[in-house]
Amino acid sequence: MKTIDQINFSGKKALIRVDFNVPLDENFQITDDNRIQGALPTITKILNDGGSVILMSHLGRPKEGPTDKYSLRHIVAHLSKCLNRPVEFVQDCIGKEAEVKAAELQAGEVLLLENLRFYKEEEKGDVDFAEKLARLGDVYVNDAFGTAHRAHASTAVIAQFFPQAKYFGYLMAGELANAEKVLNHAERPFTAIMGGAKVSDKIELIEQLLGKVDNLIIGGGMAYTFAKAQGGQIGTSICENDKLDLALSLIKKAKDRGVKLYLPVDTVIADAFANEAQTGLADTSQIPAEWMGLDIGPKTRELFAEVVKSSKTLLWNGPMGVFEMESFEQGTRAIALAVVEATKNGAFSLIGGGDSAAAVSKFNLTEQVSYVSTGGGALLEYMEGKVLPGVKAIND
Image (cartoon, rainbow, N blue to C red; front, top):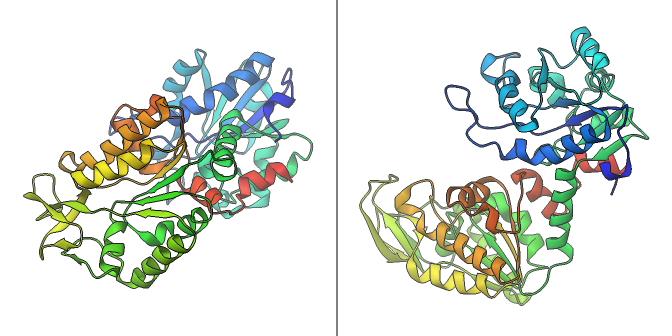
């Protein structure tokens, strides 16, 4: 793997694709800076070598070109504090001003470019746009795992302009190494925990994992599709009616491959999709009409937790219920605590970005698992066996 450890950046300008797509509140204060923290080791290594750093990122999904709401200038003060040095900002990511500021950078200095997605060419993977970005640095470093599955100008296309000078940053290298460890070097028993609303979102991943895991736990909204497929009554619970046959075929595949499949046996039900709704408990296959399942029940929590705690490798992607609402967070919390206990006992646990990462963060357990991925979609695609354009561009 071509990482930044293979080069001394003394006297070099490193153009780094980072993922600073961080959540901001109405006052433009960062509410979660994990993605910034994740990029700091790469930036620090380059600065310590005596190099200078040019950072490029997107923020949000601006539709109509430059929009103040999505300007990266809002993160300059926080980034300066994190790096303990001033961060220069340029109000464009290409063009004369960006080129002059980049050329003037001295060793140890940092320049942040304006939001790449203010140009439609970024997401289109435009070669001319990539070439204009490439003019700014001597070395290209990709440290944005969260966008590695996109063939965008700054994540993949740009690498061709640095044939002998393109590297993975530490975050990117760490993500790939941890994903690889789980996919191809898992210690057994290996348990995958799949949650979230839809089977269709995880189908390719589940198919891939059935050839690798010992146990597959399915919770969250997708579990009701499996319950209905087996003849259960699920009330008004979320269900993909066009995926019932698929659910049955996955149950059969798991059986044929000797994978133990665990589905919820009881469910926390509610009469409305609201934290204040009236709640109750029901067998997962006997949810009354007009009621919906919004979390796994106590028996299921116990069952799932036992499987998790006896595992040596754990991959968790997707919550067990609507954990954002306090009334329906117990299932996801129970799984999180079981993953933490297994980790303390020597298991390797990989939390697969997105809602799972948000859940362990909500319960203040991030530091107590082995690795939390910064890229939900990118990790899913990598685990599904797909080639990530951002990874291929460096490896080619």
